Image (cartoon, rainbow, N blue to C red; front, side, top):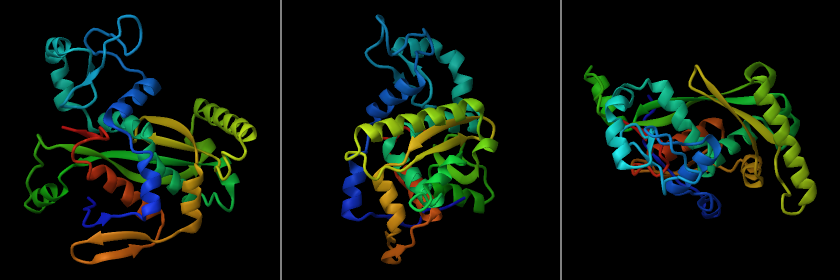
Length: 282
């Protein structure tokens, strides 16, 4: 279990660039529903239509189930209780992963990872035949408490909060790791990007290629074709060291590589104690 012992910092220019992408919880939910749909688990009302509720509320326990009203949530609780308390970790991970997918702020880290891992600044054609398989997992939100329990040979607190983390990112041949439907969406995204660049060459200057991300819990998967934006391409090309700060070592730097970017992403998610990113669950 990785334990974060340092806080990552960013140069001011990079902070400003990322801050523009920082979404609110409401924006994440809105984009999640627009991308993956959403409906009241009790009555079936969706976020669209003539009888649409003003807002779908998410269950504070599992952060997955949605309800149009408190009455619906209360009436549905006897049915939802087993799934809320005993939902398998992989199922929760992939569902929460959908909120990571629609979060441009966090996806920026994965795009930078892709630009670096696939060497897109030098060989953009690598994206044509290689995809990134992102394996998701759920870990204890309180890493120190989990470590203490493990050292004392105690069971983890079943009431403890868990947080989404990226376990591994693997480069695999596109044909091997994707379904025909995923590859079709990849080709569509490539055509759309080419048309957009042709129509707005100056505005989209420096845009990288479309990369296929495959998010998985080890059983099920979601394919997400995503264009690598210019700033991610620039960071990967420059490979500037990443500034860090810790109580023990003060301010220092580490190389920009796949490992440090993955640690940065997981750290961003873990330190979100107020659950702005909606990536925590009981």
